[in-house]
Image (cartoon, rainbow, N blue to C red; front, side, top):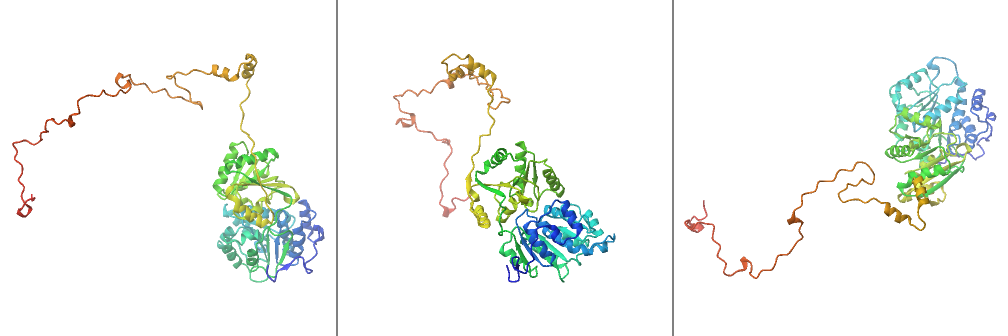
Length: 506
């Protein structure tokens, strides 16, 4: 934190009320909040909303599931109520608030919350993200919107196509700011900020995690920011039961099924590190009889939205996902999260387990650790500042057993006293001839045996060494006849001539 960042605990920070009706919000917004079923504020809302209403830049750090979206949505809508109008002209509805999110799912969730809070007002909102056709988004932008929620890549596409004009933006929100300012998003973010007006602009950064490097980088975009932390940085929710089990990689799927069965868990998200592993694991759970969907970056946006909708509707038991689903997904009463793979980035662990235990509910987070994950577990331990106890996992033998058949029971009843079951089984065992083809152990077609060759008395007879003879072999005899040359005696041999006299030449 730099010198110009003001901690929220200082005297100049406003007092934090606990009810929404004490904030001085417009009646239309309070009505929308009541429709959503909220009355009391969460700690991040109670501390951040008054500061945003006062016009200050904010860096908000809070655990996932604590209401960060409402912490910036409600005060921004309140400040834009002065621009509310019922005109149909797009010129009367310029973009005044820009919300940037790292993933499509998070952008869609934020857009749903903004629409829910602004439904009784004339303020318009729209969301643009990649993976879908640009034409419907273009038509919506041409009508005019006050609040634009976007992912960086698709927003740049609309800016270059001159569909989005950002010269009247007054408020900028970077949701999940640590990922937004990561090395991969920084160039796009700098390009987007270059299109915004240089004057007085309020900038808000909200995230569950803030590393010192991210704070230093974010200070270049904020002016005299107030740092709001309602929990220890990078902390995990106390309502989540965290378990780390040591287990071989081949047994992880059985372990997940066993925990689901023992704890009677109806739904769970299983996180993996790769898109290929996500698809394979989802197919394996399908073969195990679980209703499963896969969620990863290679899925189209329509497929991802349908998978999430089916999971929220209870039509899916297990959602296998990569870290694309770790941020921003708000699924009510999700009982459990499994880390099939330990995340490569320790901060992703905080976001993964933040999908359960939301809004004060209890949840279970199970991480399956194999022998190669020791370094990753140490990084998680260092981040959350909590000692991790690695427990061995005892697998149950869940293989199907052979049923006890009626005829076995009758045979046991008819067996003579003192007779052994093994002796009876040996008597009952079929006798196989050498020529009889045997059926394979696994069943199926048994090929006929190959035809036998006719018997040969010479080759069938065993080996007999030859009797020793008194005569030596022919090559050892001294009186053996000389070997005759193969050259005819009538052919005269060629006379040898010295090379100096022309010998050896053809």
